[in-house]
Amino acid sequence: GENVEQHPSTLSVQEGDSAVIKCTYSDSASNYFPWYKQELGKRPQLIIDIRSNVGEKKDQRIAVTLNKTAKHFSLHITETQPEDSAVYFCAASRGGREKLTFGTGTRLTIIP
Amino acid sequence: GAVVSQHPSWVICKSGTSVKIECRSLDFQATTMFWYRQFPKQSLMLMATSNEGSKATYEQGVEKDKFLINHASLTLSTLTVTSAHPEDSSFYICSASRPGPYGYTFGSGTRLTVV
Image 1 (cartoon, rainbow over the protein chains, first blue to last red):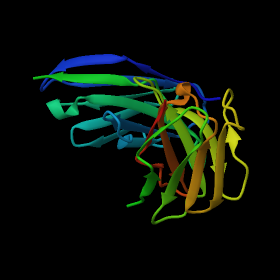
Image 2: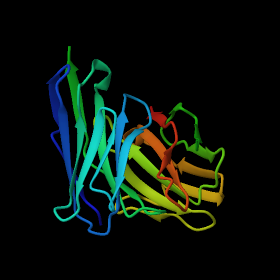
Image 3: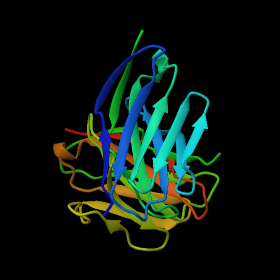
């Protein structure tokens, strides 16, 4: 089955700096890669996703890059703000009705 | 947008009793429902996948007789934790999908505490 590894497990950055979280996956058939932000006791909130026919996607301060050959994808957050502090999860799926496999999570702390 | 309503949001039960958690898709037909469990400071671990009208497929290590999943309609799926024990205390969350490029819609989660 799919295995998704995520690094780092914790990340502290100064407010205004950039944060990068990286994930690797094992299933070459995976074609959908979402990123979620989760606050304590809440549901995961989709912040950006990318499909395998695209190499990069950007939404304001958030961007995701995908390297299908190397089977890794990354989340980039620029101009970080205190409200970006949360746990972030990457995930991978074959899409459609296939299961979503989550990475181990990254606790991001933005230092004011 | 697509909404999945999950109830209850939290529940406390005694050891040995059963608890039912419901997930309803409010404005779309959830052909597939995924049930996850999340222990504190850990990731979401898939427990089982259910397709409407079919038996659920359980992940390795998940007891199907303990975690009963029913997906009898396209808008309702339930997870029943039977004979609950303190080690079953966790955050349970459902996620619905449907054909097409719609991604996954998560319920709000249920915090189960077994005492």
